[in-house]
Structure formats: C-alpha cells, structure tokens
Length: 135
Image (cartoon, rainbow, N blue to C red):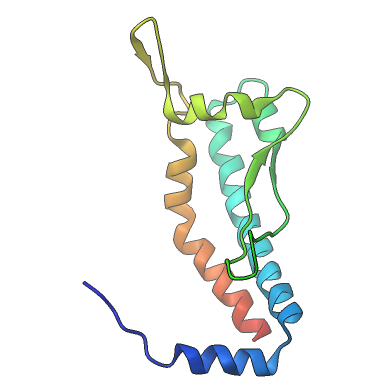
C-alpha cells in the first residue's frame, strides 16, 4: 500500500520563505526537547518498578538535538552516563541474556520498548503542539 502526498513541496517552500534554516532548526529542537521530557519522565517512572540502587535512573539522560548531516532529520538519544557505568548492562536488562545455555529474563525485561510504545502518541502530540505554536 502506497500513499501519495501532494503539495509537500509547496509547504516546504513556504516554510523556507517564512523562516531561515537556523530558525527552523531551533523550532525543531524546542519541539524535540519537550517531547524528550515526556519520554524521559515515563522511562524513569517505569524503571522505578525494578530498581535496586536507583543508579540506572540517576544516570539516565538525553543528548542535545543532532543530525548526521543537513538532509537528515533532527533527533535526540537516551543515554546512560555516570560513575557506575550502567550503559554496559542496559541492553542485558532490555533483551535478557543466556548464561551456560540457560535464558534469563530480568525483571526489567523489555521496559524500554514497552515505554516507547506507551508514550508514542503522547510524544507525537507534544511535538505537534510545540510545532504548531511556533509555526
């Protein structure tokens, strides 16, 4: 199934006439920041259910908005950065692991994927709302 969207070139050209490229990036970044706040808050609350020391939650952070090059959309990443090095075990917690042929599924198994699915519509609504405010 394919969808053809007509008029996107006109919309993009109108935006480019109205705003400079720097202004468009700034508007996108503000919307991404608001959306990432929603996601980070949801992740932290979902990680509360299986916390031991709380270091995973404390080390959770979001990067600044970035893009690989000019033609690529802006994005932000969730990172675990801190003194206890939780970034090393996040993937084990998310996907489980095998030790001596036995599969282990930790209490936090799949929490990131579930949170992304739960927050998807709220995230989009926040980003759209912010973009509508600025545009």
